[in-house]
Image 1 (cartoon, rainbow, N blue to C red):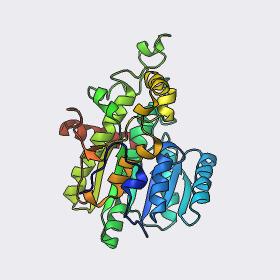
Image 2: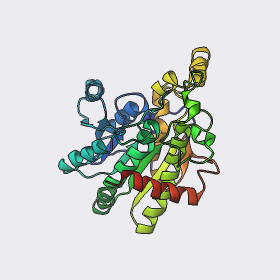
Image 3: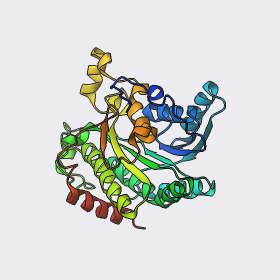
Amino acid sequence: MALFDGRATAVEVMDGIRLDSKVAIVTGANGGIGFETVRALAIKGAHVILACRNLKSAEAAKASILREEPDVQLTVLRLDLSSLASVREFVEEFKSLKLPLHILINNAGLASSEFMLTVDNLEVTFATNHVGHFLLTNLLLDLMISTALESNSEGRIVIVASRQHESARGINFDSLHKKSWLQSLPLVKSYHGLCSVYAQSKLANVLHAKELARLLKERGANVTVNSLHPGVIHTNIVRNFFKPAEYMYNAFPRMFKTMEQGAATTCYVAAHPDLNGVSGKYFVDCKEAPCSQYANDPELAEHLWKYSEELVRS
């Protein structure tokens, strides 16, 4: 078993691995750790779909990789995870390409500093981080299962969560998509505290992985699903929302991972042979790690699944 520490990069984790003939989807692939994940997988032979809301930015990311690695296979498709209609359109467009699907990486994330509702009347952070990915995964699941069967190779679903999930004390199903009086106070500009919607969305990510792993095992599918914390990285979420972390970065930049290091655990969970058959686990620094008591609650995971199914029902 390979051993990697928190300073390993995605390229180092992928050393000796080939992904020729494999197809991967990466959401939020136009920048940050999503971009580095795409680059690492593509260099190893995978045909990677960059699933992004901003097509101009995604095409620029694709062009940047192609300048460095002109022979890689990259395809850009539009995906706005805050819109259930956009998720369905993306899946239809992807399926029209008649490609198999071996790896799905639910990487995109959002932390809105203001209460906002999506076109589906869902709180935007929870909708983007969990609900959109939940629908995306469900709509692609049969294709992943059939691909694994036909190719005789394990399919892998990777859900990028966060250690911030430990701040959530469960999920406030009844009030997630309603603005509270507290959020209207001028001093409460950012309503994501220790029990924030962001933390709840990250808890939902871990619970989603665990419940889906259980259901896939029941079906006897050769598809695994795991969640992970990528590390503390100077991403847009940190810059725009977690101001204390932003101040720490300015004072002690070496405490933060680089983008290349931040993508390492994602690539490890997505492709490394160490994890053949491993499902329903949570990883930090390329190692299985404990998660919160709420993330280990099977009843909460089942309730979240049913709740999510209701939200995405057309």
